[in-house]
Image (cartoon, rainbow, N blue to C red; front, top):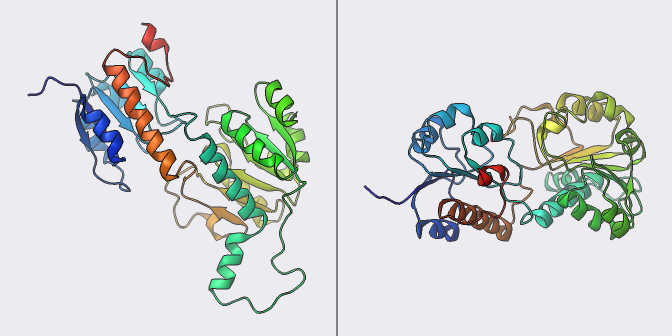
Length: 328
């Protein structure tokens, strides 16, 4: 039996990161890119693992941790970690790491793609052409909303929100933001203006949610908040599905109380094909692909590997979520 620490990877990841881990550890991996590892397999593998490399689809909670006596580190292949009960890990002295920074610009690109597609009805227009429904040019045919010169409101001005704001400058947009902390550096650099949430919603032509999912942000955009937005406004959510009340959003879009939405995330993922939002022509959707460029996903996998190697060989992990564990 090997004396080397064991790592279990819950989804097939780029070979480069696997090879980095194999140089130090015994490595097992769920060999599917799309199918989620069954819970019973995850529990069985966690029971003999020193480290886990997890995806957002894996719930790391007390039930799993109680059955993983050797576990020392969980490296999450995402910047968000709402799939992990961090407090439960911390109580057991288990380090949690994530992958911030390496996906900032790529996720901002995706947010911008959703914004543009929703504003200018790109997906709807594509469908019209492909289905042979384009009959002629007409003055108001397939008209959308202008992006240039409009007002963008960012809910959350962290690294990704700031990257979206930088892109907005290229479209000569007025930049508003709401965040628990005033970002005077961003205000100076980008001319962004702080607003309370209600004012931001009232003033913005485009509202982009860039906040993590926490007890405070769950359902942050609901019936009342949507009622404050302009009828010509576009809501873009590339953060977490639970930030938006999807039933309220459906009603607002269906009744024309806001113009459109661009969504990369949903409260339940994968989203059921019968979800009411999928029936609306003014909704652009994507399957949680904010960081899904080839270079970025490879960089995320490498960062996970670096964190696991450091945590299990006496080094200093690069991106700890609960660094207090390292001081214990």
